[in-house]
Length: 324
Image (cartoon, rainbow, N blue to C red; front, side):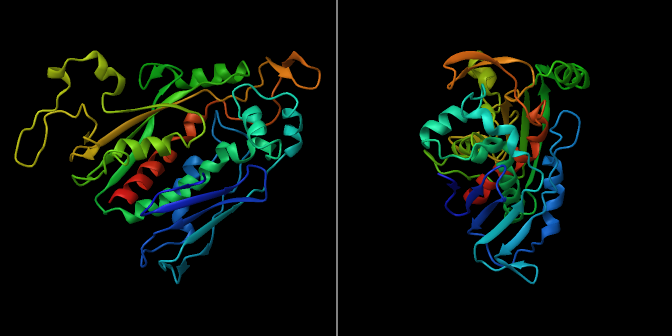
């Protein structure tokens, strides 16, 4: 479904090349200051235009149409609308007969009996993450003032930060008409101990649920993550050092038993290389009934991971707004 959350609930709607997209937020307490300018900082971090991102640049101007009066939330549902203004729908007309490799063209068409909006990926497009960022702006305002959530790119095309030339990796992929992936790390600081509702609403469960709503995410890990499987218990255990429950290390990534333990909650998400590439590929043509060479038209990111850090922050804020 297109809704998430219990205490703080968001419902998203719209398609990439439709008239507009938006989000409805329920459970926001009354009396929180909120205006359209509050969204600009995070929306600008997600916006395209930088090297390696799509030439399709939208103004992403939020329109608050309910739930705010005189600059404060009213306690009623908040609806935020974004108009789509820079679309080229003709680029996508052929994807029913020749579904793009790596995309939801085929699966969505089968699931919805060809009634789905295929333009720009429709409701499956990464553009819909704009709604997650907008919800994250509000969620951050619902958290205690001391809480800090920051995310950044720590790996690109297999090269960790400081180990390779990310600029050249991007340039090489763009020259080849190809794309690259990356890893985004998010750190959540100053969270109180005790957040999380095991088993099914544990901290990891909620964040992971939201993470995989982001198109292109292929994996998530907390703390040492998969590397923990290569360690001994004596190496991985976080030993307590005082009555406050502080630990000497943070291999668990701030979570024990699905509950925050007072350390920073740290998670990383793996972002695949963009599926839409201009480099020639092969796909099955359902009209000619044979495999044919295929080139994806349109405007696309060479690396969608570049725009994911603020989305990672947003999903973390949404999860903790539900738990706190």
